Length: 228
Length: 275
Ligand SMILES: Nc1ncnc2c1ncn2[C@@H]1O[C@H](COP(=O)(O)OP(=O)(O)O)[C@@H](O)[C@H]1O
Ligand SMILES: [Mg+2]
Image (cartoon, rainbow over all chains, first blue to last red; front, side):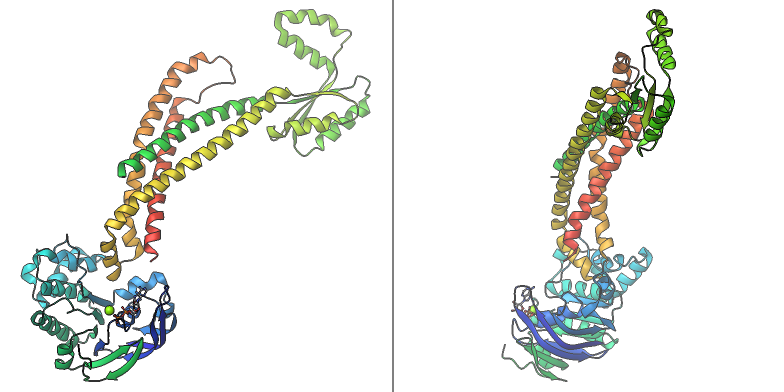
């Protein structure tokens, strides 16, 4: 599903964020990416939905060669990948329903299909009764659930989350993890960067640790391994 | 900012419209006069028939020449008598002892070549003189050329200013919506999908900016057509008729407005989407 070989990334300002990464992730896996701040976790994740392009090396996702994917094809790649961020990235003036529907409008689904599918995923994340709210009227955890609903609304094979619980209190974080586990149980691959020792050590999954742009550890049912 | 950019389009189009109206009318006048431009080459009285044939041959060999007509001195005199009307009768006494020359009347394919062709013919043997109304023709051509070039430069400058202002206006809208655009891209929106609202906005700004210029052109030209036309007495000087000219001009102005708006939007969005 994801195959990275010898991936280097040097940003235009000269900072080298990735230093030769080799990683394979199979369909249906649940993978944590851990490591200190500035280690290159976000850059690693951005390689997978072509937010950034590798300076060197190959990145293959869903049989697409992202290292030489044409710029015009990027939108079509993204439709098969759900992305969740720490800061939710919801549109403040739109309702919960509209925020989720957005991802389907972009691919020009019919209003009827959109309506049905959006209510379905809102139900899945437990927000069916808040469809008409705007993001400001929701708690952080609820906003993240909206973002997750938007990420999965077009049935992607892969969901990528960059510190999805970074802004949430522990209790809310567990709710989010429960939803991600359910999505994973249905067969969707999940790749999640996190700083939460509790989560990684409690919900045991594969752990890839990155330091200074290199994979320093890759264990199934691994530990968080850092003190903070 | 929106008002400023619509205003820029309006100003541009009013100037472009006025200028186009002027240019197209001047062009028509110039065209009328150009049509009438001909070179008259007078043959030496001493030339015999073979030499005259030779001259014709040489003139016909000049590539720029479109037509050559021979006019004997008798024909020349008749033409003169006719053109003088009443007074022409006094010239009739010359019919026995005609002081005029045989002549060739030459037209060039492109009136702009008149000067060069005339000087070339002047060099031929047995040519006494070449006339083509030098001063009028040259001045007219020169004026037309300058007017055209200056006007074109002016229009291009104005159009680009307007495009720049529109693209700036749209850039501000884009900045305001940059978060939204980022999210659209995140969920897989194509650039075309993201672009079209801005495309529409540009089009609207451009079309909005052409409303006043079109009204000004239609009413202004109507006034000229009804009041000024009668004052012009030369037969080669005439205004293009209001219908269809003013309407066509309005359509052109609308088109330029739309192009300015769309181009402005495309420019600003393109920069933004490349990221
Ligand atoms: N867009 C960027 N331009 C320049 N440098 C960047 C950019 N993004 C990240 N970096 C740098 O790359 C390194 C890795 O960053 P990042 O991948 O965000 O790490 P992490 O997510 O593990 O904290 C850092 O030194 C960071 O400053
Ligand atoms: Mg990060």
